[in-house]
Length: 267
Ligand code: DGL
Image (cartoon, rainbow, N blue to C red):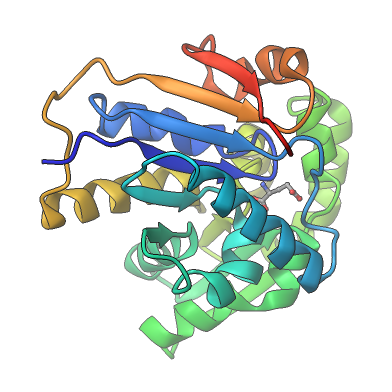
């Protein structure tokens, strides 16, 4: 048993889709969330900058006594974690592995699509992990840089989102993928639009959800679950406006933010 909280971070709000799932599968766990809202987006930045920002995020969470860190950000997980995850004493999990395993498990025609930020797609990490699990898979990736601003500005279910998504997704549709990894934690909010365009036969995979499942398996196997099985608390820290986070955050959580939101000190 280990009653310390789980730390979760993202470049902004997207990681809340993982928090939502964590609260569902591990309702007793306390969560400390850090959203680097002052420096979002990460997906358009250089590798060096993404690594530096991710290091700051990890070190912010390490100010608290936590038992596990989840990088609930596709960009940080694919670009920075390969360099950082073994540099700290605490276990750090990204969102890629669980999603890749699930994609390999569910695909029937062995044609997997991946959408993500420019940084994520450029890293080639999703493809690398999928092929390391099952070399016969064909992976088709597409960067969708407009998806994050659409979601962050409340346009997830709009005509504009449909038009842009049609443009991004048509090449993947033409490749006949039967499984699509939504490789950025913002994208589950576009699920309806993406599913309408890809068609109901294409399975959509949300890495944040699978990361929550992997976190549970890890805590269980290491004997690190919290003693109480429900009533876990959340605390949220942001590097920019608390008000903006509170108003948009409930969209990501599909619920009001339950827990206090603080401005991160010295960030
Ligand atoms: N949360 C980021 C991700 O999952 C998207 C936003 C950004 O570009 O920072 O890749």
